Amino acid sequence: SGSTEISDFYTGPDSIIVVKTSTGEVLNKKTQNMTDTTSLTALSAVTSSDMVSGRTYKISTTADLEALATIVNGGKTCYGGTFVMSNDIDLSSIANWTAIGNSSTRFSGTFDGNGYEISGLSIDSTSRYQGLFGLANGATIKNLGLTGVVVTSTGSQVGALVGFANNSTIQ
Image (tube, rainbow, N blue to C red; front, side, top):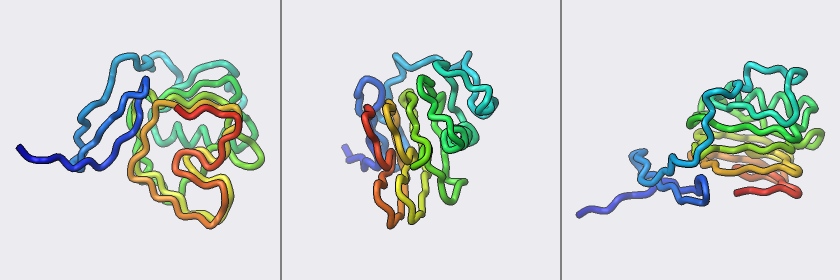
């Protein structure tokens, strides 16, 4: 019997460890208890003024994630909103990711990765509050894996998942 090289691992739904080999094979990915997203509205189909507090939106594409950054960074905290991923998302087509939330507007909703992963996140910045989420306040970010992340920054409050989280829950 041979050995298997592990390239990534992360916590998934209900704190289940998900293990990925260097060939991309997922050895243990829990698919039960995941949120059914088939009836949810894709975030990229909604404008900031159309968003309803307390509603749940689907994140299934790069455009959906970019829409979330645009909405939050444009002044809407998304308090009470829930955003649920419906599949893995590859961000490698974006040379320099704009974080969701900044010093002007913090992300305050719930982001549920639903056991999926975001790959290819790349950030090169001199600014504060850099990560997939730049600044979260009163937020919940859960059930999300990150792989292939490259963050280069001379700023403070920098991380792969969240640059700075205040009064927030990361699961």
